[in-house]
Amino acid sequence: MRADIIRRIIRAYDDPIVRAYCWVRFWILRQRFLDEIGQYLPPSGPVLDIGCGFGLFSLYYAATAPARFVHGIDLNTRRIAMARRAAARLSIENVAYEEGDARTFKGDGEVAAAYMLDIVHHIAPDTVPPLLRRLHACLAPGGVLVVKDVDTRPAPKRWFTWTLDKLMAPTTPVRYWSGDELGAALRDAGFEVRRHAMLDFLPYPHVIYIATRRP
Image 1: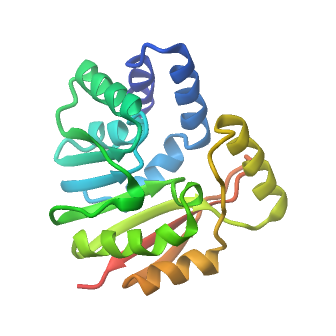
Image 2: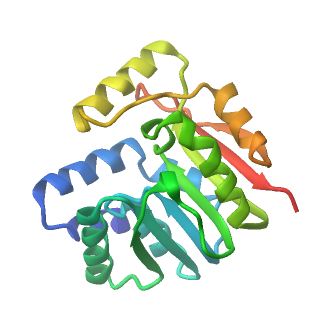
């Protein structure tokens, strides 16, 4: 059933280039990994998707948990418009999209959880700590921030990922954080942090950080 949801989401986009991108993203973060990440999201309540892009993952997490309301934020106007159109075509009503910059996100209410998937290594390092503090402030006590990103080790996997990042977005800056660095930044923002390694045959150094706001 969930594999069918992924196929339906991809078919909801008209642009063949976007569809190809969707296939690549869902191939890299396929259902098993999406569900590994999703297990840390509450089954109901408001959830933030920071840097939602075309809405692929917000649509998946909204479709697989109807009591969850996913609010996607991205700075790209075209991507937000495409995400809204895809949600309408899929008749997914528990999702909404807003144009906004993750680097200056302030939040305007309390949420049960938030997540960032492969976002941290694409934004300027000096903007990450204040963003983490703002996300901590908008989470309910006991709320969770899930950060999926790329580790710096092992080096061959990091260089493979860097090459792919540059092929997909040549002008976008890339700066990977080590596990110690990003873990420390999350703790400095007030979170309790644990790591979840994502083991895969593909050459990507995936890692999930589960950051919880203390009750």
